Amino acid sequence: MKSYKLDDATILQVVRLIQMGMLTGTDVADQLRTLELSVKEGSNLLIPSPEYADQFDENVDKLVELAEAAAPE
Image (cartoon, rainbow, N blue to C red; front, side):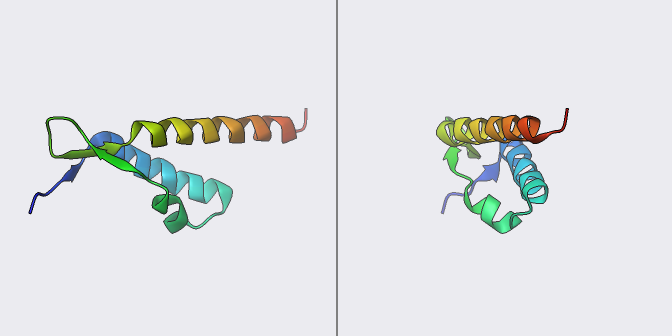
């Protein structure tokens, strides 16, 4: 059976998901369930899939916009 390790980018994403759960008050397990991984070409490392990473960044941008709009001036 082939084994895989987490790439540093994946570990960083796990940290971001934990932070997102804490900031939004959502269950961290639910945040982690959204993580989608791909095998890094030519290695045994798992990385966040490009589509997942793009979507996550878009969602963070939307949250920042909502927070800025809701902040008192």
